[in-house]
Length: 506
Image (cartoon, rainbow, N blue to C red; front, side, top):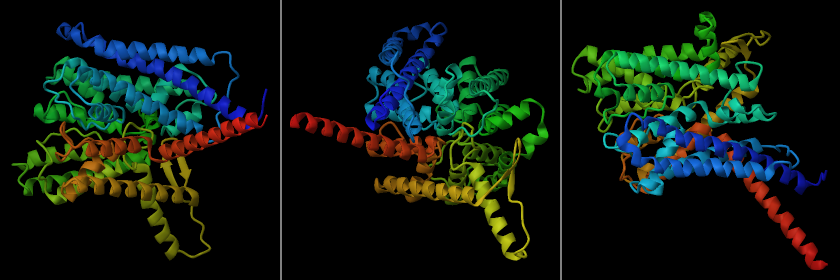
């Protein structure tokens, strides 16, 4: 076998094409899934062609791509090519899934890509008029939330055992392996996810939702996605019971999947001892009454019980990056209340969960780093301290390198947040609302101050689209993929130029 640089590079890209073939076939199946609602809504049969054409085309294209590399030598992933696969898979998913929206003729390319990015990133910002949209398209959005929540790579690994699986699994943002076997871990996560959705659907139905709304809202709540079948979101139902079920699902959705395994097994001490779970519960208990007071004094809630109810719901919705609403909207919101929600949206949910944001784990590390630094300054220099945090499976030591990586990521995240907010404000929107809107996009939240709309400027939608993708894939993966792809293209072009010069000399 040839071991020259160009050959090794070609082998690596053959492996990448093989992954893309598998992903294409999976995407084809995902696009076809909404057709399952047609027996319940036969009057929407005319919409089926919008899904059949791209769905079947993706399955066929993926199969042919897999055939092209069958029998070829198995390539080896080079440095950061796992990031290329992950980012490429997500871009492929977003672009391909935009086709049904485009085929309707009701959406342009920008709007279709925006909606699909919002779905796959589990953000929930939308340009679709949900009250008038066909149910098959509403279900399609929820399907994207489902698979975007668990991750496209995780779904692929649940059916494909692969030696490079752990690299792809980690690159997509999954921090924990639940079981020794990665494929079994992926299937376990999907089973937990599906079980919660089924339970949520049943509870929603008991409390008055029809089955279609119940299923869609259960998926949207657990995936921390926030797409609703109602323009008024959860506020449409004005039901404390429905809001309570939604709060529970949102909290479950923003919790690390490894912690879920301990919860299901009844190991409550491990679950509630986990630093992120404690952080989330403390933040909810502290911020909810604060936000309730701001809603009450701002005249947005007329009674104390209503203010406490809305304060709890919107705190959990923002912190878990879900984006459901129990109040009419956020345009003209008091500045103090907007600031509280912006901070919650930036913090986000748990690592290895369906939620976005900086992640509670990193915020907790920054908090502990401050405490440890102050402790060390006042302690005798010969005293040795054990710097550790509690995870579901035990204590984890936190070294200087981890602290530096966390601080670096938070700084980069805030820089992207500042840039996106600046761009939105350049379109004439108030700074507070621009910051709120972009923190919602970057944190994959979905709450809107009224900037995101069907007729929003294309530049605004593309800025938010970039924010949603960067937020879901946590920035570094996108940067690594871009650098790796650019480097491979440059090296490939140089190798091709060298070969052409050699032939000319002959």
